[in-house]
Length: 89
Image 1 (spheres, rainbow, N blue to C red):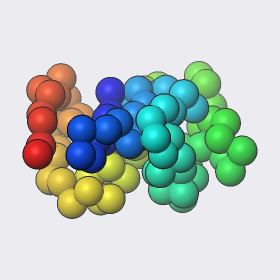
Image 2: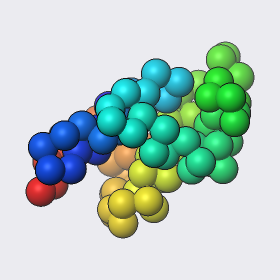
Image 3: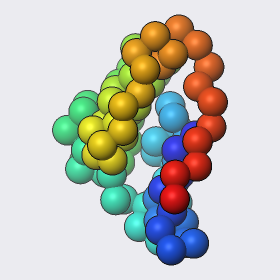
């Protein structure tokens, strides 16, 4: 799950692996990056085959979130473990 809030308002949220269902005040905030990463087509539909394993799809989304917001996600944790939730103010 990804959620970006600013000043107490949900700006953009979506599930990792469920990027076609976005919500918030600006649900398409990351749409250009999702398209550039090959996660979604310009029409907002999935660009990756449905049969593709989440292990190949999800890192694309995590990488673009990391890049867009200047985060550093530990590779071993992203690839091989469950990630804890973080709240950044």
